Every structure is written in structure tokens, then in C-alpha cells.
Length: 161
Image (tube, rainbow, N blue to C red):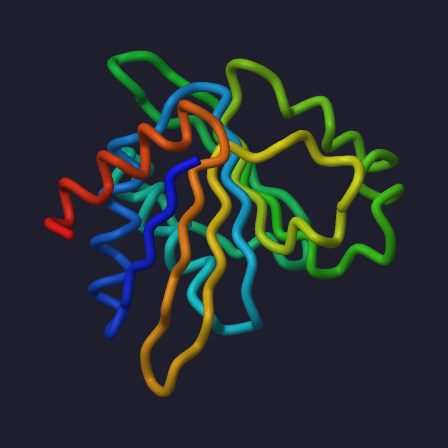
């Protein structure tokens, strides 16, 4: 497992981190983001999608629970699902909604509030924990698999940390 703590003192730094993470994406990757409301999870996902080549607006899936995108990755279209599970009452709702079918070797899944589907989500490649510190953020990144650790390594090099 690889671990890295990043301090984000502005929205621009969060956007830069998202851009860096976007360049480390691989098909089938699972990224789980934890943190309080307003901690920067959706801002990070927007930066990932914009850098990956999504040109339209990026909606927060707070009410829809999931948003689907197709992004170019190494010249090929790849499906990316952005989940916001804040409104789930229990993990079974995740299964009942059919969301589990998206977690395959081809689709990139980014999940905000993964604790709301504890026990039914497959293991993450990367876990990110946002903490609000004054006006800034601290983000603890954990590479839980080889692919996740490799991505965190690329982020660290690109961000010169």
C-alpha cells in the first residue's frame, strides 16, 4: 500500500490534483472519496473529468446518485461512473439500484460517501480522505492495490511532492 498526504490550500490546488489524478486513470479503477460536506470531493471529480476530456458541465450526482460519462483514455472511449451515495439509507439500496453492475474491469468508478454502501462495494484501488483544516484541506490518499499505488506514485511525481 502506498500512502500520501497532500495539503490543498485553494480550489486551484484541488483542481491541479484532480488533473494529475486524471492522467493516472486506468480502466476498471475504483476510487472512493470520504469527507464531510463541502470538503472538496466533487471539485476533485470535476477536475478529473475535465482533464480527461469531458467538455460538458459536470453535475453533482447528489440527487441522481450516479452520473455516467464517456472519456477518452489512451485514445479509446472509457466509461466513468461518478456516484454520490450521501442520500442512501442503507447499503442494500446500492444493490437495488443496479449500481454494482458498473464495477467491472472496464468502467472507472468514483464514489463519494462510499461508507453508505459498506459491505457491498468491491475493494477500492484508491481511497481519499478529505479533512477540512481552516480554509484549506488535507487529503490523505491510500493506494490499496498495485494499480492504486502506481497512480499515487504518478500523482506525487507530477505534483513534485
